[in-house]
Amino acid sequence: MSITNELPRKGKLGKESIHSDSFRIQVALEYLDGEYSQSQVEKKYGLPELFIVL
Image (cartoon, rainbow, N blue to C red):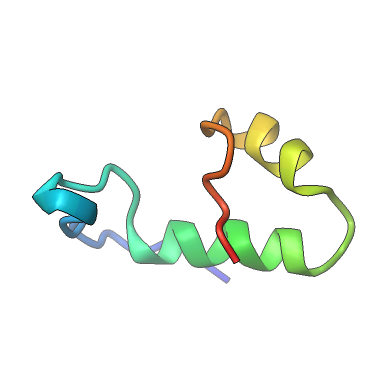
C-alpha cells in the first residue's frame, strides 16, 4: 500500500488531524497483520498511546 498526498481531515472536536487517511490505514493494517503489537506499532511511528483504536 502506498501513501498518497492526501490532505488531513479534521478529527474529534474540530481539530485538524496531522495524519492522512492512507497513513492511518497503513498503520492499522500493519497492526492487524499481527506481526507487531499496538504499542510496538505506536513506538515505530512515534505515535501517542492509543492512536490505534479498534
